[in-house]
Amino acid sequence: MEQVVALSEGVQAVMENQKALSAKLDMQATSLAALGVAMGMTYLASGADAPLPADVLEDRAFERFLTNYPIDGPPIVGKAVMEAHLVELDRVDPSHLAAGFRDLARQVHLATIERIRNKQIERIARERYGDLEAIEKGRTVTGEPSREVER
Image (cartoon, rainbow, N blue to C red; front, side, top):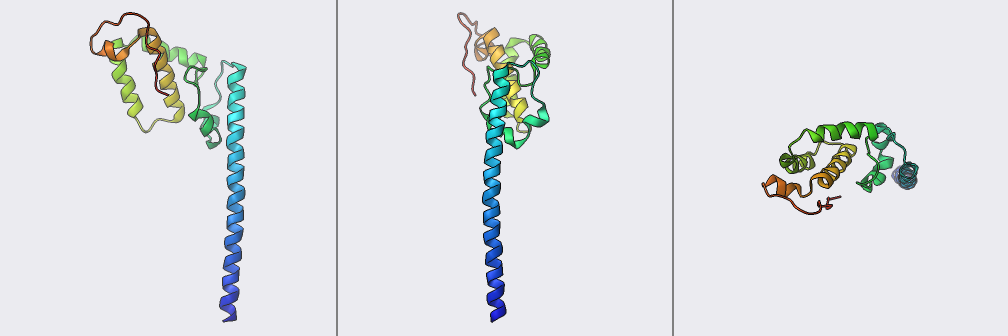
């Protein structure tokens, strides 16, 4: 019986140690996420043309920062890469853009960085052409371009 009691106490001690370790890891993860946000906001404030490296942004520490990345902020992929994407955008008939952006939004395999890039390109397309859904349906768009874009 004493062995069972000793074993039970040992298991209890291991479980308490695991809980304490888990709490410490949660605290460190929270700190890393806060650092990721701080580093990301510093990058945004610097106005740098070069993007943060993709492998850095894909780290879980940057998850909260990317969730709140401003669609109208600096190109997530960098200025030069974004300009190349915009050259490609100019080659697409505006009547096909709305469907293309809907299709991109449905793709589940895209990385967060790719989703942000796509939303940034969509915002630029809407600024250039206006109401993409109306253009898709063949309606002539007059007046100010729509600035509404989902976040």
